[in-house]
Image 1 (cartoon, rainbow over the protein chains, first blue to last red):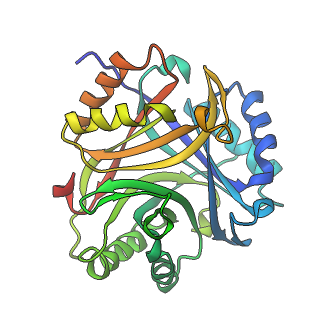
Image 2 (cartoon, rainbow over the protein chains, first blue to last red):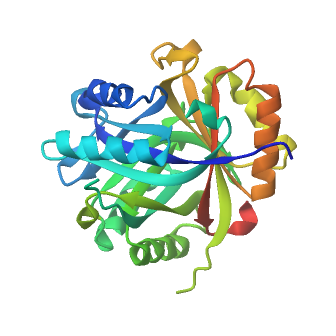
Length: 102
Length: 102
Length: 102
């Protein structure tokens, strides 16, 4: 077996779609250039957000990075967005190939 | 670092889209109000379900909650749906901010 | 509690949508028949891929399987696709019901 998986954090953020550009700026600021976005809809403390209404749709963004970077991003999101926007963030441990990409 | 991540379970369910309302009732019954849904398509023991055919599309639902609640929900899903519907559930450990929301 | 969760690997692959059939053949070759696909868009080393441009959209595929199978699939993907295509794979530990399905 030639694979050497490396541990990284998977940071998942679910939030209002209109925050996408702000989040991408946050990622870039922390040196994270790779991300994956899927359209989502859901319900939380801020009420149901239906993806049939684009202005109120959610996005689900995933980022792979080192733990330190993940926590810095989450801390920044907490300061900037949690008060005024519906946003959920969670971290999980994953094994990746090509750790140098993350 | 001011973040104090807390461990929670991420419960992911992939099933036929027509089960959405039943699942939301299950969640509410167990005190879970927050969830995220993405449209999905896939293949399992019940055959390929193509999202181009809405009546047979799948949904992928994610819920963050305490382990006890996650297991109760999964047990209920197993009793009610596994026999007659294509459904996959899995649990993973995640760290969250705002644990009081979950 | 009658549930006996079993540990499996969740293999997540994010790649160009045109690789879907190749990936499904890989899965079948390794005895994996179940998978879930969601449409995605994102940015990585190969530039932004916008799902509004179907020819360059991404897909996010999830597969549940035993660790040995997951690593074999990842090794095969690395050999066949990593050089020429934007592809990200990661593994995480999950608990599943119905382990015999995976």
